[in-house]
Image (cartoon, rainbow, N blue to C red; front, top):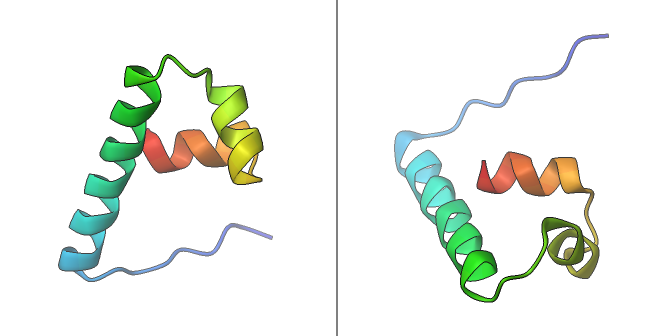
Length: 53
């Protein structure tokens, strides 16, 4: 089975991209490792990278 794709409205995609960027900046400002942020959020590292990448 292949992965399902989700079609997002451009406005929603832009907001999600902004949110991911803000999460990344906050993590870097606090000098937190990706593993710790993912653990605190209850998600895997791969999922966090998908959000902030």
